[in-house]
Structure formats: C-alpha cells, structure tokens
Amino acid sequence: MVSRLFFRAFLTLMSLGLLAAGPASAAMKMPPIKQKPFATHHIVMQISQGSARRQHLVLNVAANLSRYYGPDKVDIEIVAFGPGLRLLLNNNVNKKRVDALARNFGIQFDACHNTLMHFTKKLGYKPKLDPVAVVVPAGAARIVQLQKHGYSLLKP
Image (cartoon, rainbow, N blue to C red; front, side, top):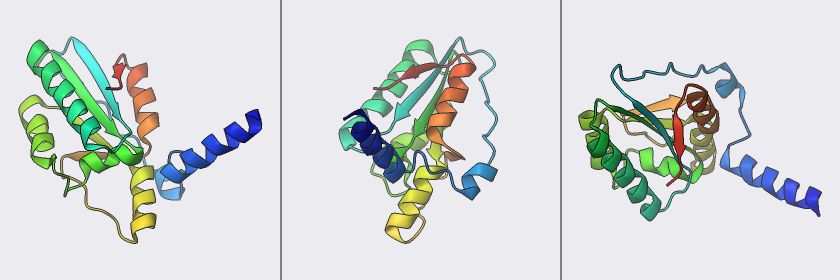
C-alpha cells in the first residue's frame, strides 16, 4: 500500500515536471538572491496551483504585505511551479497586476524551468512568459534556497 502511494505521488510529481530536471535544467544556474538593503522581512510565496482564485489570493497577500510593511521594509519573491506557472504566462488575465507589483513594490516573480519545459512538451510550443518573470532551474529548489537565506515561506 505504501509503495503504491509513493509510486502515485512520484508519477504526479514527474507529470508536473517537478522531478524531471533534464540536461537544460541541470546546466542552468540558480539566479543570485537580491535582497533589498533595508528590508526587515524576507518572504517567499509559493504558487503551485493554477486556479484563478489561488492566483488572486497570492497577488492580494503580496500586495497587502507590501502595503503593511512598506515596499522598502519587505522583500517578497513569488515562486511559480506546476500549474501555478500559469500566473506568469504572458497572456494571463493577471498580467497587469503582476507587472504593477513588480514595478511598484519590487516583488520578484520566479518561473520554474522544469515546469516550463513540461508545458512546452504538452503544448508543442514554448509558452511566452511575462517579461518580469525570472526563470529558475527548479521552483521547489528556489524555495529551499531562499529559506536557507532566512526567507519565511507562505503558501496562501
């Protein structure tokens, strides 16, 4: 029973592109962490679900935190992987909000390369990302990296 559950979980992660780091991902380097110099709070937010409701929630939480602490006092990085990568596609209905949060509050948006390659394979073409998105080799690995540098993880 346990091995069956493990196998199902393994197949699910593989289908989302979370475990399949092909040669391109393996050669790709994680971008440097650019912390704001005066930030007293460092937050990484995970979006791994593709629903419009989840996208709105993540963007609302990021905006509220930026307003509460002030854009100079909080450093927020939103990492999108799995179905959550839809938030960072160039044709997403939330594109204007994503762009405004990046421009006005300095929020960084990370796009998982593994998931992008999975989308490319499924669609037959590489979907265009929002230009504010920073491509990272693996979304989950980026979250782990940021947590090691003192970022608090939020999964709204």
